[in-house]
Image 1 (cartoon, rainbow, N blue to C red):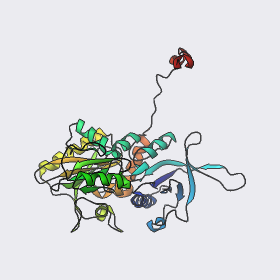
Image 2 (cartoon, rainbow, N blue to C red):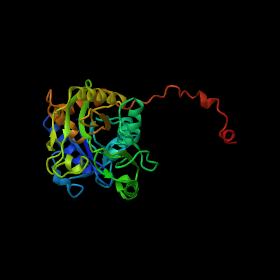
Image 3 (tube, rainbow, N blue to C red):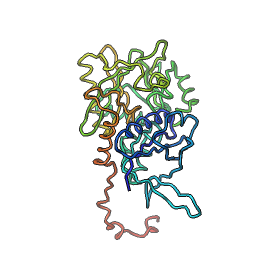
Image 4 (cartoon, rainbow, N blue to C red):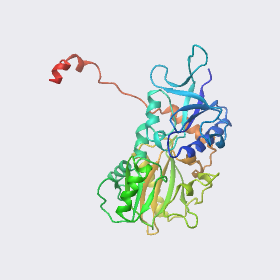
Length: 369
């Protein structure tokens, strides 16, 4: 039986639509190679479907495409993605998948949930491990980890506690992407109101001081076959734009990240570029980055530089940032797939669980006494 490369995209996430675009880019690129490709669409309500990898984005505009076939993700026994055959006696038919290219953005596709499930199902996949994904998605924990390692970050606190600095403030979902649900507010009363009312902040919020002198810088890192850094980009905003880089700034209608306004490569002072690259490498090592990770910074003309966050499954897989040597998306994906096959994420260790503690244990009733 021929083994297939599965491309997973969608998911119950605010970034569901962008994930579809990334997934379709990956699927179409892989179709140009000799690989057998299957699309796996994860709906906004959490169901999995097999879809033709040749579909275009409008097929998903109103939900599940007409060509979709229901799938199950099974853990234990015959693990993996499968479906029930039709007929009076349906049988479980498993997809012969060698590797999953994970193109999910935000939500359970990027917070470690689907990674842990695929680990338990024995599936090899591209992108971050469950632990790395969880660290990258939790903005509070990520900033605390960076600060503990001596990496410069802005003050960042949980939104449900005391705010030890003056406004204006920038409030972000604690568990979310880099642009959706982020707002600038001037005072604590407005801040508290936003935290109570925003659907994106219900699971937690983080608060930082807002500084209008800071601008965005981004760099991507590939982990295989060796740590490789991309060019640095400075995203730009359209005239009359908001005070922060917004979702619409990043994802222009019909074009996406690769065509959004930017300065690439960014024109930086040599010392700023060197510092940014050093911090990016250090961050990648710190979080055990895997696959392609985009690392975001804030900087100003005075030479200050702050680590902002790590996007462990970035939009368009940040392919457009790697200028030299230039690779096709198919070549980049081939490298990611080799990493997934050669460096699997899940290697449970049971050494030490030899039964000796159980042999000598008292009865459970005695332990409960």
